[in-house]
Length: 607
Image (cartoon, rainbow, N blue to C red):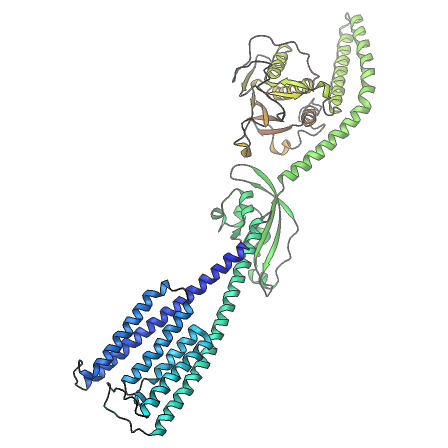
C-alpha cells in the first residue's frame, strides 16, 4: 500500500507540474498578445500622424494596463494555487471578457478582433479538454452575441478607438456576423477539444509505456544484479559492455575497471570462442550456444579460481547476433569438495585393504624379526652372513613401518575416552625435543617457534603427535642438506568475525625452506601411495590428511619450487571451551625452544 500511495503521489505531482507549465504558457501568451496589439495600435495611429496620447486612445491604454496587471498577479499567485482547474477556468473566462472588452473598444460588430475568441477557446481545450472548450465557446458566444444585440438595438454604443469607420446598421450584416462567429466558436471548440483529448491520451499512453519500460528495465536490472552467477556481455569485437554485481565479486574487480576491456584480457583464450572471423556472417547465422566449460582465473589478490562458464549469443528481434553473454560461476569450492571426496574414497579403500592384511602381516613379521635377531647373535663371526642378516632385518623393519602406516589409515574419529584437553604449544615443543633426542633433527637444522596464543584443544594427543611427527619428518626430508624449520601457532580472525572477541579457528603452520612442490603436484600429495621420494611409501601425507579430517580440521599447503613449503593445520576451537578457566601450562608468547627437557613421550610410528 505504501508503494502504491507513493507512486500515486508521484503521478499527481507530475500532473500538477505539467498543468502549471501549461498555465504559465497561457499567461505568457496573453502577455505577448497584449503587447503585440498595443504596439500595433500605436504603430497604426502614428502612421495617421495622430497624437499617441489622444483622448480616444486612453481606453485602450487602460485596457492594456488592466490586462498586464491581471497577468502579472496571476503569474505571482500560480505557485501557491492548489485548485489548478478552477484557476484555469478563471483565467480563460477573464480572457473572454478581455477580448469582449477589446471588441467593444474597437467598434463592436465592426471590430477586427473578434477572431481573438478562437485562441482563447483553443487555450481552454489545451487546459480543460473538450468539455472546457465547449464551456468557454458558450461564454464567448453569450458575450459576443449579447454585445452585438445590444449594439443593434442601440442600447450601447461601442467605442471605435482604432478608426472612424461606422457600420451601416444593416440587420443582415449583424446577424450574419453573429452566426458565422458562433459557428466558428463551436467548431473550434469541438475540433481543438478533440485534438487536445487525443493528444492527452497519446501523452498518457507514451507516459505509461515509458513507465512500463522503466519498470521492465528495473526488473531486468534487478534480475541481472541478483542472479547468483556472474554475467558479462561483450560485443562482436570482444569488448566487454556490461557486468553484474556478482561477476564483480567473483573477479575481484570494479565495474569501471572491466567495462571496455577485451574479453581476451580478462579470460585468456576465451576470445577465440566468441569472436567470429567473418562478422557479417555472424549477423545472419549466429552459432548456437556452447556447452559448459571451465577456465582458470587468477584474481588481483592472487587467489586462483576454477570458473565454469557458458556462452550464448545475444540476438535482436530479427534473430541477428549483436553480441555475446557469458554466464559463469565460481566452482572452486565444488572442485575442492570433489577432490576431497575422491581423496577420502581412496583413503577409505586403502584403509579397507589395511584392515584386512595389516594384522595378518604383522604376526609373521614379528616371528621373522625375532628369528633374525637370534641368527644375528650366532653369525657375528661371519661378516658376509652378518651383512645379509642385517639386510633382511632392515627390510623387515621397512615392511613393519609400511604396515604401521596402513594401520593409521584405518583410524576413524578419535574415541571419546581418548579425547582430552590438549595444550597445543607444549605438545609441539615436546615433539621437537623428542625428534632431537632421536637424531631426527640434527645440528644442521635450525628450529624456530612462534606462538601468538596458548590454545587448548579437545583432541586425542596421540593423533595430534602423529600429525606433527609426519609433517616434521616431511619438512626435514625436503631439506637433506639442512635448513630452517619454523612452527607458528595463531588464531586468524575471519572477515565476518571482526566483532567477535574469541577466535574460532586455530592455525598451526609448519614451514621449511626446502626444495618445494611444483603446482601440478600439490593436488596429488595427499593421495595414498603418491610419492616423489625413491624410498617413500606415499602414506605419510595421506595419513596426515586422514587424521586431520577425523579430528574435524583441514590441512592446506602453499609451496614454491626451490623456496620451500608451508603446511597449515586448521582446527576449530571447542564452542563450550572457557580458556580463562584452563591454564594447564604457562608459555611466553613468541618463545623459542626451551633448554629444559620436556616430559617423557613415546615416539610415534614412523610415517
